[in-house]
Image 1 (cartoon, rainbow, N blue to C red):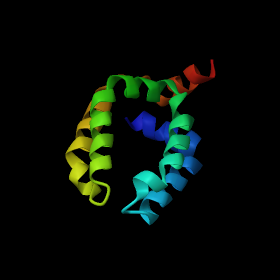
Image 2: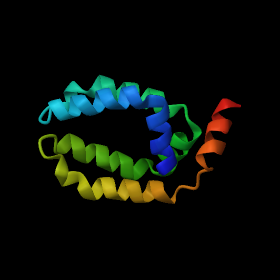
Image 3: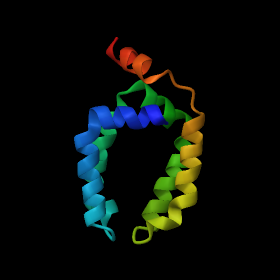
Image 4: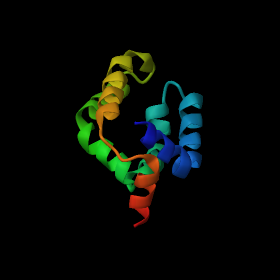
Length: 107
């Protein structure tokens, strides 16, 4: 999971920052108001092999987390258990170290 965060921060930091600011500024309606920015972040990260592997192996807990967010737009703290399940899954995904992952995406 650390590799995925590093990759996102390295290659998609502007997109992540814009999305994070949108969410912070729209606590009651971020799901609707920030959807386009979320899509931009997803497009940015989706091409990287580490992120693709985490998404494939942890799709179920991630979808449950997203569904929880949709149902709890004004109280996202209700989704703590869902995000923890996703993070636990992501931590178990076997990925190459960051240097290898970056090299694989270049070749």
